[in-house]
Amino acid sequence: MQSADWPNADSRMPPAPLNPAPATSTLPAFQFKPVRQPMLWAAVAYSVGIVAGVYLWRPVLWWVVGALAVAMAAAYFVQRRVWLGRGLTLGAVFLVGALHVQVRGASTSLDTKIQEFADGRQLQITAHVVRDGKLRPGSFGETRQTVDVETEEVAVDAASAVPVHSGIRLNIYAPHPKEAPEEGGEQAPGATPIRFFVYGERIRFPARLRPPRNFRNPGAFDYEAYLATKGIAALGSAKAENVEVLPGFAGARIQFWRSRMHRSVIAKVHELWPARQAALIDAMVIGEEAFIDRDTRMDFQRSGTYHILVVSGMNVSILAFVVFWTMRRLRVGEIPATFLTVGFCVGYAFLTEVGAPVWRATLMCAIYLGTRLLYRERAMVNALGAAALGLLVFEPRELFTASFQMTFVCVLIVAAIGLPLLERTSEFYKQALAHWQSEDYGQS
Image (cartoon, rainbow, N blue to C red; front, side, top):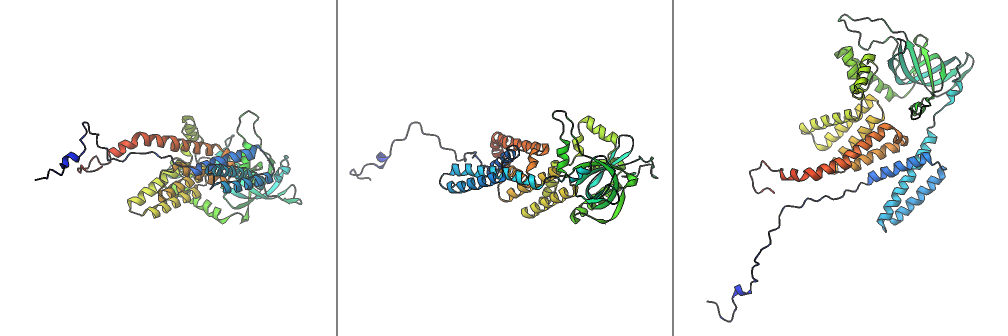
């Protein structure tokens, strides 16, 4: 029995509220945190610097002094005023971009010495092939092979040979052969009327040179600038029977082996498929359009699907997906699967030698797979900025090409707008349906 001196324990308890508050939910709130994208802003600053360096020319020393001064100021303020330090860092990146494009442009200027001979005179030219020949039908029924060569010497006559090292785009013409079907009734796969010139071969030929010219129409394609990026300073033509193959090899061995593997793949494709189908496979898989006939080419152009015949970043994406998915299905570890996938993509880009679009996609694939290893799968925009910055450091004038602009603008729209929008509209349903088949009602 409780003593009267002691108050009842129940009397010390506060009265229960009439309308008790509902219990708070134990489910974690889904929060979206802004992701910092330092590489994206660095790429933007570097790109603006490249544009400034091209259109606002200043002495190189100005850019050097400015970049050093702004970089030292950024190092001073980065711990004191973070926002000011970051702004100054982007300013230093801007100045480095302007400096790079001017130094790069001066050091890689096109050698135009060959244009001194592009006056219509008949020349005897000794050169070596720097890009494999490309076959095209000529305008008057003949066959044309386009070969990029680097000259070794140019002679106006037998006693006046001058050493010249410049790029020439040479068109070699030959009459179209008569149809000569094989026993099975098919045209010989890849049959050509003229010898196919490959990388590293030394040749001698007579030709008349002319400088490249642009059309004067507003907005017309800048053919001169396009050839300049390929190292071509003059154009020439020759007949196939007048081209003499010389002994010896000139060029890099690694490019020679790449060219040899490229031709081996083409030969194997033509062994396995008829000529018409093999030509399409060559174009879609390894970027070789030499064997596509005129009618097929026109059909794809009229239907608006000619891009199917062009090797692009989509090919690299498909290859990376197939290789990585296969490795994971075979229970290969994350790190080996990543390195194998990147290795296959690099080998494919090296084999096709299509150029910047394929290497750009390969770099973006490597950076994205690398971010997965660092558990940064959501940093797609940051990876995109890193890829753009790496390409611009390697070749700053790539910024002005249509393929670079279209690739990065499209991917940026998808990564910066499409994916966040998808996450904000579907992430809640994904969490809600994560355990919809589970019989354990304790899942949360």
